Amino acid sequence: MDDYLDVKMDIFEHTGQRARLRRTLTISGLIEEILKEFDDISQDSLEKYAIYLKGVDQPLSKRATVTDLDLQPQDELVFEYKHHTILENLLPEQYANLIEEKSRKTFTIQWQPAVIGRPTAEAEHNMMLAVDVQYIPDGMTISRRHAQITYADDHYYIEPLTENNPIFVNSKEIPFETRKEINNQDRLTFGKHDVSMTFTTQQSTKPAPHGTKSQPIPPVSSQHFQSKSESTPQPPPPVPSQPPATPINVSNVDVILSEAIAPHLIVEHATDEKRIGEHIDIVTYPFVLGRILPVLASENGVSRRHAEINFDPQTKTYTITDLQSTNGVTIEGNAILPSTPYEIKVDSHIGLGPEVLLKFGM
Image 1 (tube, helix red, strand yellow):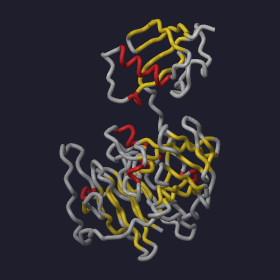
Image 2: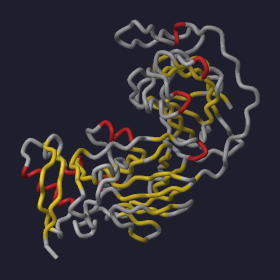
Image 3: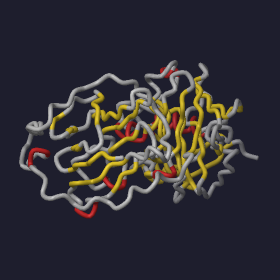
Image 4: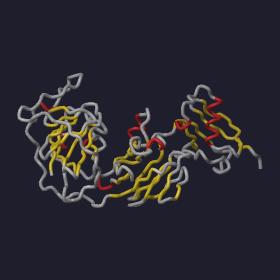
């Protein structure tokens, strides 16, 4: 058998290229050869590129050789940017958690694919980053795109995204470019420094019902919102009957709620009037508020990850933290500082950006 295979390949605008491939060449090696040959293609990151069979959306495995893939002379290849993955929000009852063993930090999986790693300069990566490990013990030994968790047909899966930094499920290594189903209480270990987390699924399906939903409130005072015509967001004036919100220091304790607690938020104002009166059940801590929630998905003034609510079981204190959102957070009309937890109580009014007002309740 000939040690080489002749195929046709499209390389961006260089279509119909003829390539003679050594059968032992890997797809990763082919990408490197293409980047050497075409100096008009940026070589800043090999991870940006992939090779596809024409008409097939799944990229060819970078570890596989031409022989492994059983490529044939009639096959046509396409070299291009790796296709973007579409983010899918999960329903609250589908959420899962990763609990880091040393710090006890809990990360909630609220969308899929949920990337495990560290932030980068790429906005798309950071949007998909569900488990940011940079501040946990030995977190900096984890790759920026280390792994991802996906959800399909009521099952969770984990998939390594890096070849040289391993993943173990219950002490068994998962090969690169494969995925493995994970179940409640599985132990996941990342990297060579044994950063370990316990995977948990929801223990209850849904918080207890709260009774009749609140009716839409009368027109809300403008003190809670900015005028749309303002070019620069300004904090709303304080409400005379309420003292300014005061930041407090609390540990970011992460727990799964029991049905007995059942806190929630009620939408009292939104640009989508159909959402007024709807409940947002707080099912885990930290609970992230933003456009990742279906009820807020159409609110352009709300950031994707706008704020988060936490609970300290020792002090029985609920707090909200502005996650450096674009349009800010208010409590009773008073703007709060970003990255700082502020106490909230039953019936507290929380503003997200210029249009959304939520009431915290139990």
